Image (cartoon, rainbow, N blue to C red):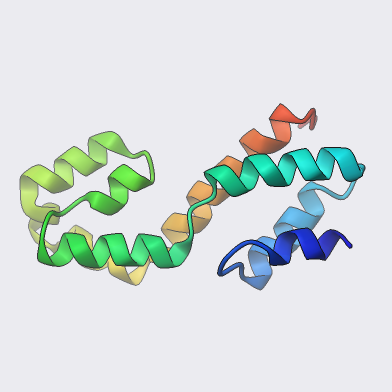
Amino acid sequence: MRDNYFYMLPHIDHEEMMWLNELTKNFDDEKLRRFMMLYQNSRKDPQMILICTLIGFVAVAGIQRFVLNQILMGFLYLITGGLCLIGTIYDIINYKKLAWEYNKTAAMEAAAMVGYKY
């Protein structure tokens, strides 16, 4: 039953699912439902990050950083043309890692909101 909640997340990979299972293993059904509602609303899909990065590669650099709430880095990319495209190319290669780092933080924040103790 627990995995059914996680399968609803778009483009979830095995590592993220295992991490979420470990994070929520002590949650009852009500806490898990509230956690999933909060996490789903804040989670960023890795495919969306890739698309934003590709748009930044051909148009306005830094869109992916703004989407990931990295505002200062987004402005830096915007001003420098994606750090002369090197930063944008790096983000294209590592888009899954960028999304995973953001999602991990979002999961911890959602868990804290439903009463998870670190």
